[in-house]
Amino acid sequence: MPHTTEWRVRLHLFEDDDGTTKAHVVLDTGTTALTGHGTAHCHPADANVPEIGDELAAGRALRNIAQRLLNTAERDIEDTGAPRPGTRQATGWPM
Image (cartoon, rainbow, N blue to C red; front, top):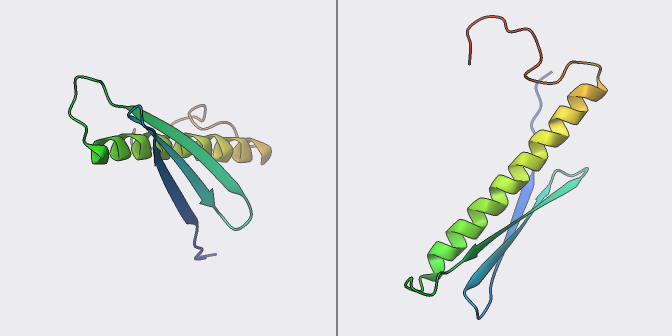
């Protein structure tokens, strides 16, 4: 049963005057939307390089939404009656 689908990701970055960069990411699957957040703070002794704050905040927001997506998948697996990933009896080669 092959299928193809497209999920859309929107990532917004905001920088405050105090050197804090915030990221807000939305994953739209067409049937649901998940959100993630991340922040980065520029230390006063560091050079002000906005791209680094953007990268850190965006990476943290994406990592946050990735964990939320994995948690959702685990709950969906449990709802089918299957055991939680990691609790199944291992077969084949270890990962």
